[in-house]
Image (cartoon, rainbow, N blue to C red; front, side, top):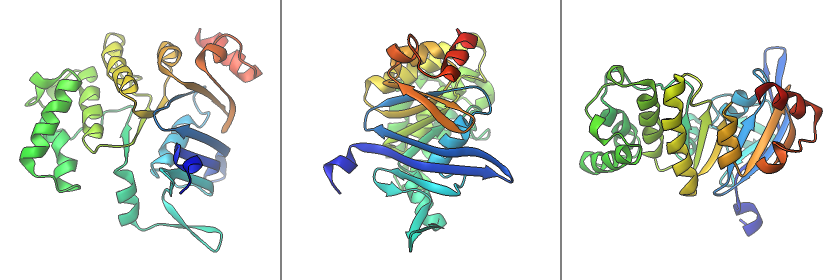
Length: 258
């Protein structure tokens, strides 16, 4: 693999997705460099969440290609056509991709610590003592070391989302996907989650973030990508996007959210 290829963590080319007769992605192309933070914005229904879910093959695509770390995700090519890969290979690919959802999706019957060590022990085969030690370090990283034995029902929404981030990091991903990670939180809890995400960005984690938090996009993003009606209509550095957007859709969107 050439140096030119390996600089990209994500390479999405001409991605198309239908739900029945409705086309929700209409040829989305986006490359993300290693260590880059890309924030995707746009109105509800623009295709942002669907696109991010396609990167992790939680949604199947009908056309186009998505590669992560140079490897085709979810499919293999056979005579120039996409053929869905085996579940085993797809599961192996997902180990490199951490995902944090709008809803926290924690296992309610497991403690914070238990949620974090589940995948490393069951999927990666890490011994429980090592997994526990690494999980405690991750809880400390998100400011929740003292909540290791608490169950999700005993945690605030912001605390649950920070545990979800720690759980994703436990698999040592090379890419983190965030799908509106603060939209289900009370306003006073948003800041604590965004602070953890800012710290990840400072540490050089490659991140794709779907969010309505424009302050986060201004401060943390290397690039802001605007989606509308299943297409990327603009991408630019935040200092350009927020002060001199080119597309009319971007201007209209920013007028509504500012």
